[in-house]
Image 1 (cartoon, rainbow, N blue to C red):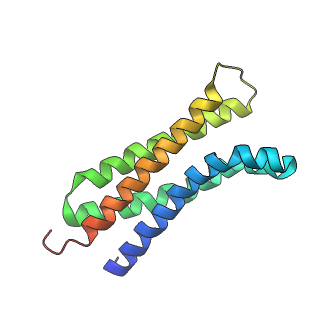
Image 2 (spheres, rainbow, N blue to C red):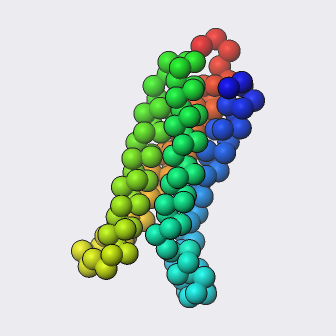
Length: 135
């Protein structure tokens, strides 16, 4: 993978990671504005699709830059962010199954947003490190 491809992967990773945050923040408004559309946007399938788009791009991008720079910060942030997104997806599945465990839905949203922002931060450092000419 050349530098241009690496740069594109990080930018795509940032956009997809932010899409998770936007999804979580927009869902309540969509649910209020258009119940039919809101239910689709809130579905389990959307969470799975977003994760399946985000995870491979992040892993390829972080691992490629790590092999080149040996800088662990972006990779660590990426693993933490992806792990959090996976946990949030599992929490969403628990909510969708009809579980009435406390405030699990609110916890899922917080975990998803924080994890998405951690992943964006990892992509930012990964992008910055991939530009390093002296590494």
